[in-house]
Each structure stands twice: as C-alpha cells, then as structure tokens.
Image (cartoon, rainbow, N blue to C red):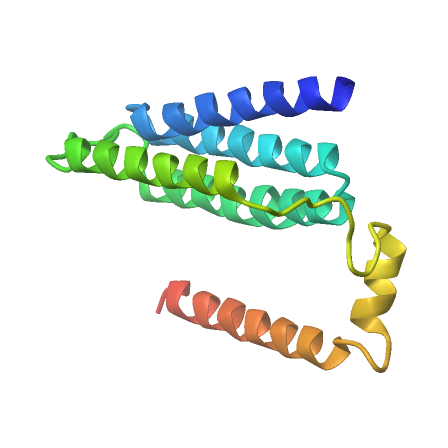
Length: 161
C-alpha cells in the first residue's frame, strides 16, 4: 500500500513539475523543474522495482542532459530573456489531451498483467545478461563508441577557432 501511495505522489510531482517546466518564464527555472521531473521518474522506477532504470535515469538524464541544459543556458546568457509566448499553445494543449485520452484508453483496455519479468528484476541478473560473452556485450560496446563519437563531434563544434 505504501508503494502505491508513493507512486501516486511521485506521479503528481512529475505532472506538476512538467507543467511548470513548460509554463515557466525563466529558462533556468524551467531547467530545474525538468530536473525535478527526471527525479520523479526515477522515483517511479524505484516504486516499480526497476532499480537499474532508476540509476540510469539519474546518471544519464540528471547527470548529463539537465546539467548540459543548465550550462548551455548559463554560457549563452539566455537566462534573462525567458520563454516567449507562442501561437501554438492551443494546438499543443489539444495534442496533449489527445495523447492523454489515448493513454487512458490503452491503460483501461489493455490485457497486460505486468507481474513477471522475463529475465528477473535483480540488477545483477541484468548485468550478467548484458555483459556475458553470449549476451549483448558487442551492442553495448558499439553504443559506447557512438556516444564517444558524438562527444568528440560536440567538442569539435564547440571549440573556438
């Protein structure tokens, strides 16, 4: 029962911070609200017994993406400008309501029980599955090389001449 209450509280925090991230006038406040949003998603992963996904959420999204957004905003002096009003606010709200309705319909009509995991819920089982010689070690190495290439490309583009 406690996990269910925590799930609903984290969901409300997630929705509130996501709405504030969109509506905030300051880009810095929007970025910090996005960090709260990412933390809420990590908390929801923990309540769903997906600890590995929660750790990845914190490391990748909060540790890299959100810090990158804040550093970019601070380096470009955009924090005083704020978000400008947009003519697409009404279509965005309509689109969001359509996606929410589709999500509710899918959740209510789905036959998925979601009680068992095909390989287990333990993080060590996931690690052995990923990094075993017969597992996905080659794909993980290729993904790391792609990320390294993107980092080197970003540094090359950002470097002053």
